[in-house]
Image 1 (cartoon, protein in one colour):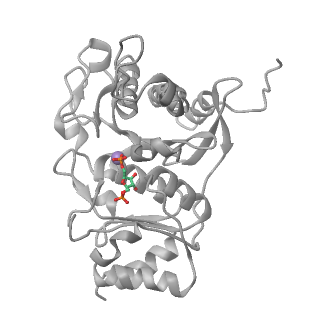
Image 2 (cartoon, protein in one colour):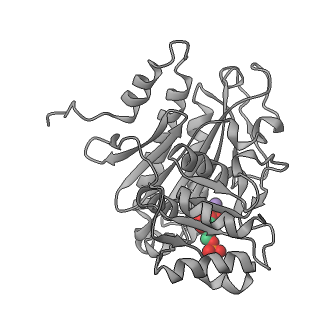
Length: 331
Ligand code: AHG
Ligand code: MN
């Protein structure tokens, strides 16, 4: 097979971007490469998910007498395993772990970044072959290099993200990530096992005709949110919701649209997690030209107080967000 050198791999792309920063050490490229590596392993396992009928239900014992791990725990272990040995990551926090993890070896303690992730987002969709994803977020640690990570490293406001991204395990597998320089998407080419640049400089259209919300919760929304949804209906916008945030937001970033997960009577704090889901998507959305708020405040300005805190979340095309805010915020 002849390798097509006109394709730009994730690795090559991040290293080329380093040239914009002569003082850069390459640690971020290294971290992104390792996240890509873990994603390939998760992808492999996700692709086998349909075979659980043959291989055994997740959570059960397979015919070799080993436990078949639930996919979300597998993804979590994979990311931890890779990042623990990555020279750029001092510690992680994950939606699947109660507390953050500080990697306790000399190399990791001297790393400058920490990483937060939702290992398998939308995992309730696995059984029915609907796209799921991994979400990640990278910050420069605030604690002293050489020492163990501290909680404050993980409770930074979203505006301090150095990079954020997601992997979508869909009809193809893609890794999309944002830095302040832009948002770029890479599709996994299974024939060479590499993420290759397929969606350079992604921007979210200023307006769209898609609104994305769990309609089953409609009666539990505030009057203002209901009014906004009705305004979408009056304009015959399409409602699209699969219940995997990664898939729902990926579509809306590319096509233009708005995603709403408001507070409900049952969940007055909202459902989505600020650190693992909302901050990374707010960062990606803003770099792509869109916006993200909790209804009254920009997501990226919220000061987190706990690792697993939740927030109402609205994100999408700039003009649609303006219309939403004109209803939510008293003038
Ligand atoms: P997770 O699978 O990581 O727990 O998250 C699921 C989230 C998100 O992906 C999705 O947008 C939302 O939950 C769906 O919630 P509803 O079923 O309440 O609509
Ligand atoms: Mn989640």
